[in-house]
Image (cartoon, rainbow, N blue to C red; front, side):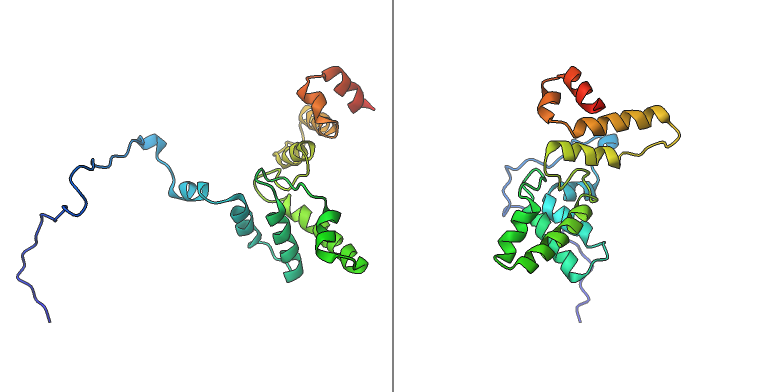
Length: 178
């Protein structure tokens, strides 16, 4: 039973840490104060972020495994480079029934993956990525001009992206009208 004498030693021994270290200061202004959650999230990998979102989905064990496999198959930019049949073939081998089942499961899981944030994740190419992002934008159903612009933008996303990169708007216009 320690009662102490009521005194407190206010001069800590800092010799262990060295005396040359400058005092730590915070250079962030009050209006630029970083949110701790955002700082923690910035250190999280894309796959970890997607797995965390997937935890909130009500999925069977098989569907969760298919979604997890697709998440792990993404490249560092969030694209799914391998085709679904190629991924299924790698797992199923020569079993045609299992191959067909895996392709079906992967198609379902791809839809779920592409519904996660960030918008565009799980796309197989730039056009699909942009189309997913366009569909994710909030829209005003009463604005006919906005709906028409979105429709044209989606049509452009279906065209070869090199035309957009080259700014070949005349050819894009003819392709989107046909």
